[in-house]
Image 1: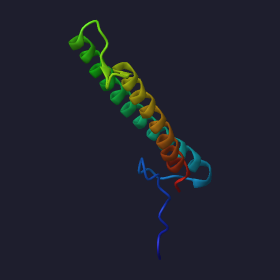
Image 2 (image 1 turned 60 degrees about the vertical axis):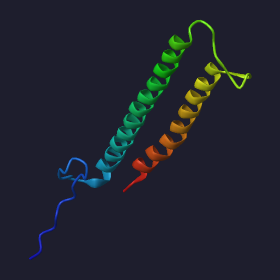
Image 3 (image 1 turned 30 degrees about the horizontal axis):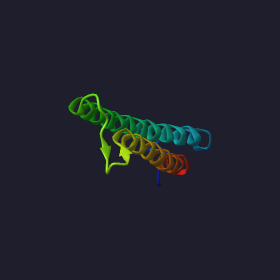
Length: 103
């Protein structure tokens, strides 16, 4: 006689009594893990950009450098920050939804 294997939580590898009520909690946990991972990566990259900006400011002194005679260096760093935040926001939402909707 074949024994029926219990449904298990793939993340915690623990048996689940009734998958119907437990499945949304698994999906929420996956979504929160994705959100935490994207937040940590974004903070690390933004901190690195900010440290590079401050380092260049100490090298250049009081005067702000201008690239190509038009664009202040500060604008380039702010554009990098904005692009990174918008990119992580867009991609993060997609990955969180995929993690939440995965069966």
